[in-house]
Image (cartoon, rainbow, N blue to C red):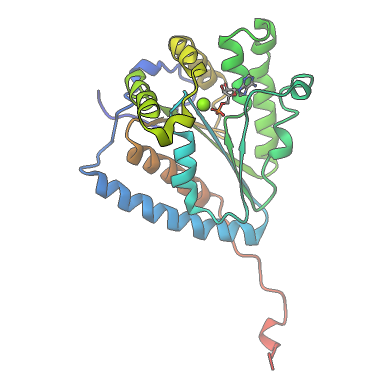
Length: 268
Ligand code: AMP
Ligand code: MG
């Protein structure tokens, strides 16, 4: 397999079987990547502080993956670059009865990042066109109409100053097997094993198609999708942290101008 692009090309149909989940780019060693990740995290810290001070821009990071795809670990390792003050992580699980009685964005929208802040969605509104679609939890007509609603929602956020980055952490089915086995074998990991995940594993192909449709319908310059090769955690961390730094550099964040007269203040 040749060089792999991480950002999903616009207006193109993605076939996930063309994407190597074990891809590690041009890196000669894991150490080399880890050094770069360290530098990225330092830069994220600086940029976030400036973003917080300026209070104009916001950043929304959406993480999606198959089970054991590494969402929690990405939050643990990459988001370490952010100051917890000004950074929020929101997980979206099976909707409550009250949530199900509302439109799909009802539970999502209140968690959009306020100006100056970063919010990470651990799963998101996309579950409503992934798990819901694969398991036919609503009629086809209903989930099919959701892509449009999702696009409108994300455009509204983008127009309101939110930079949106969406990461699909791509692991292979073999890698998932190893990670599940690890959860079974190590007592301290047992709590992470969910027998229900085995059913989702059986639906692997259906999920891949559902993801491919998401990339075809909900990939825009203002809310791009990244397909992150995630079998190797160090490469995954490099891709995600590099994309965050690149996007934050583009925000052109400036410290707010100093209030007038600061130079005349004398502290006794
Ligand atoms: P976890 O991320 O391991 O805590 O699992 C959360 C579970 O909630 C996953 O099985 C998701 O598929 C499920 N989930 C999240 N959003 C929805 C939704 N909108 N409808 C149905 N299930 C969902
Ligand atoms: Mg789970």
